[in-house]
Length: 196
Figure 1 (tube, rainbow, N blue to C red):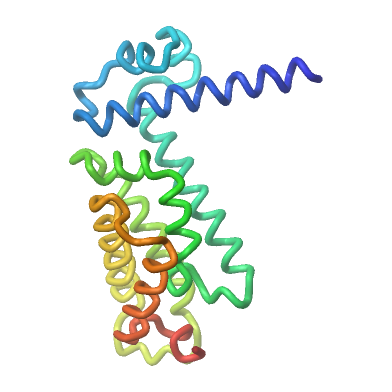
Figure 2: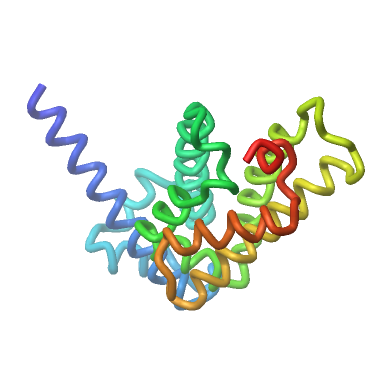
């Protein structure tokens, strides 16, 4: 059993090293210019080890995106389960904390021109989360729910992107508070705003 644990830890460390090396390269150049050899060399592993875990650099990028989106989904589901929290956009501090803690990934995703796949997935996840919140009976349907969700999600991602591109100039507490105030001021978070 101890051998399995050591092996598992070694695999996790190897994958983390590969991912870290890949993200460093991804923040320096376009995906097309990155080679598996460069990733392996920077991660201090051989090419075969990279291919053992990922079919190619596109698979590696896809897995990186998927892992972080899944972590954000999990984080937001925990928040949704907490009746005090009132949702991700209204209480976005855990999201900003997560982004701060994984800054190299998010910085690479937002700084690289080829990262539209990540942005699209993040936009889809946030807008779907918001759509769920807008389905309440007290929504007056003045604005179409899907358009409203897209608007809110785009605004939220724009703020996150600004914060990352400016090297996180404000604390996560400050950012979460500002997002909540912006959305409350504009009365664009239905149901939650009416209760607060």
